[in-house]
Length: 323
Image 1 (cartoon, rainbow, N blue to C red):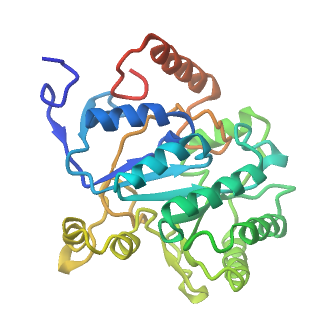
Image 2 (cartoon, helix red, strand yellow):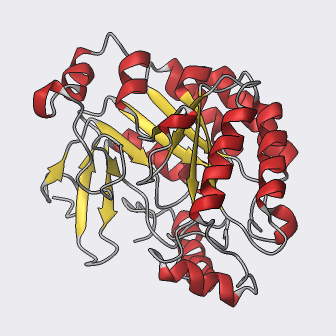
């Protein structure tokens, strides 16, 4: 028996697969995902303990893709839709290129074009625009960041149903602060409470032209006075709306206390996501965004990605992104 098969190691079989909060699978690991889908499972490695866990796709109802550059993945996405797979896409589009904070990303124009392509493939209701994170610096003032958000929103208008934004959290993730300092971006900072209020108000004003549902991700503050809800990026509301005929999924979405949607216990208290299982790996995203909490260092990422490419060249079957 193959020791890496689901039969050799007890597997979980979640209804929702997250691909991935930890890395950009559509941008860099689309071939790996396609192979794992054919084999029916992937292996997740706990980033803290190193323990392996098989994740079976046997009961999967929805695949949720997180990305900043889905262009390499568009053929796979089209195939998934043709096969009748249920898909949600969370597409982050920021504009921090001038500051060198997103060195591995394609041009903004290319990402906007890709966003519109994804909308055509999956439908605007299943596509969320994420502006994540909102951060400030000596040159990135509130006015400048809002100007850039406005420009992006105008370009994406009509292609998504929702905007989810979040504020950078440097105190929560010391690794992010270290990486910013290491690349000479130590002036990056969190918005103050007063600045957050201004930003929330300004987003609402910009949205008068876009008509998006607005949500703040992982935010303890209440912005409902601006018409901004608390985000569940993997949202029970969107899944219920977009896949109404999937009775298994619908039952799951109402299985929480009092018939409410269940909350993902693996996420922070302020997270509104429903339970899912992530299949990504930390320190594997070659976008190398300087504010990323999931990459320990650029050197570690480069080493891991080189290892992944070597496995691909050798034709090895790696159930996790890096073995």
